[in-house]
Image 1 (cartoon, rainbow, N blue to C red):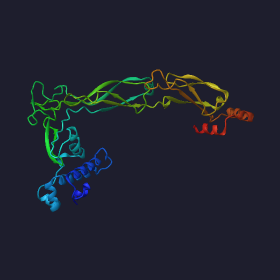
Image 2 (cartoon, rainbow, N blue to C red; image 1 turned 60 degrees about the vertical axis):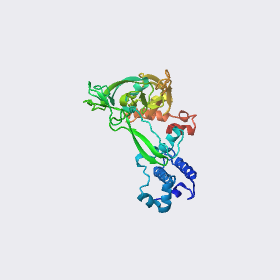
Image 3 (cartoon, rainbow, N blue to C red; image 1 turned 180 degrees about the vertical axis):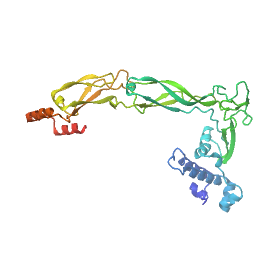
Image 4 (cartoon, rainbow, N blue to C red; image 1 turned 90 degrees about the horizontal axis):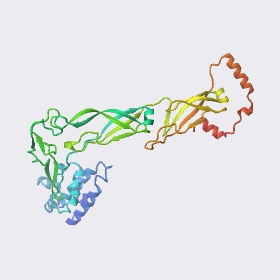
Length: 381
């Protein structure tokens, strides 16, 4: 059902031209696509407001509407058509962006739109998989990537080697075509990319056989990449200018390498620290012992103090991961003591265990640790 343009703009029927224009500008700015990205109906609302202004800003159309309504406009061939402008962003730029850039303009102004020029190449992405030890020290690795690259046969100009390149006849070398449409501010001229030369203004007489005149082709290449020390799983490395090639010599996009760090069964990473576990038999934890603990630089001896309890942690300073972008800095290695109660004892071992159990006194079990401390240690919090 068609809506009344007076109601759409919120003006009285006796409103003059200035009031109509002011009401439309206020409403149009409220419906700007940047402000209403969350509203899928903003585009239609803007077009409805523009259509209402198109009617009320023209004395002839307004008089026809006042006498015959929308039917009169339709039969008289005076209905506005904004289809040529596509999205609400294009419409808004036509009404406001070009006007402000050109120092304003009245109802009969003509606004021009510049061409976009050759497009920059798109960014590319590729995976990189490394070991935890390589992540700790940094590594140089080879990465195979597939990107759109400049055609080697035609050097990117799209022409078969040795054949001429002519000025595009359709756009006269401008690389763009003009399309016009009527708007509330008069006739608007919109510049669009030439559909023959793709905006380059030139057309090869004989397109390159390898790239079919596009000047670019898909290729695979190997790239040496330096992975910095301390990088974590899921982080990205940006390699500037190594993405997809741009159009007509425009700048290439960037390459983003998504780093995957393979799990190491010896360690769990916690930020810049590493965590590992050593198993200690309960009698040895009671007596104390030296055991080998793994590190990124090889095994080291750690001392298990007599009476060490389950879950106690021994911290080895500077034995963890390198700190990203902090040369010379490393995290710590936390060695968690897992006190293991022996199973499947022999008869002799059971006899020895009974003799030990019978000899245990309250003094052997006494601890200065609070109940809360015991619970935290048991729950690893």
